[in-house]
Length: 146
Image (cartoon, rainbow, N blue to C red; front, top):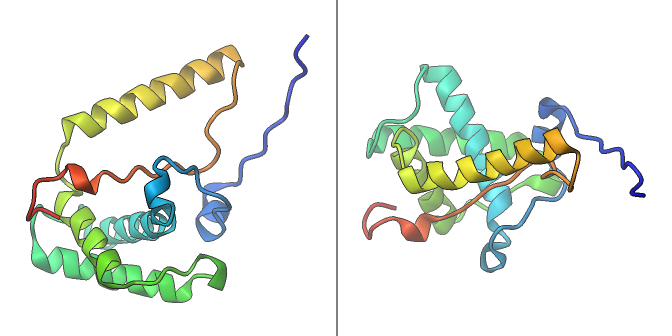
């Protein structure tokens, strides 16, 4: 007989400030989840401020998103601060350029993960994903897009 296991999840506000360990989806990019955590917080701040996502390939929106990321990163606790080097800035710009685009392969992948998590929740079998899952597929974009 399998014993029940109680899981504890942080509220979103707490988890944003202290995300804990990230689920790694690509061990060649183990350093990306903290950057993506910052970038998606900046994306949320951009949407709150402008009432929309950054426009596709809008350089001004990409620059605004990067500035928001810098402000959020500066205010972040030392444990989750990210080094915003050229590669990090390029990744944030790529997020800005594609934030309002619909990428069918990504939608299909996340739909599959979401469906799997719903089945886990409904059946009580298997352990659900914990807190945050960031999936980086920048290399799937054509050259010059990112």
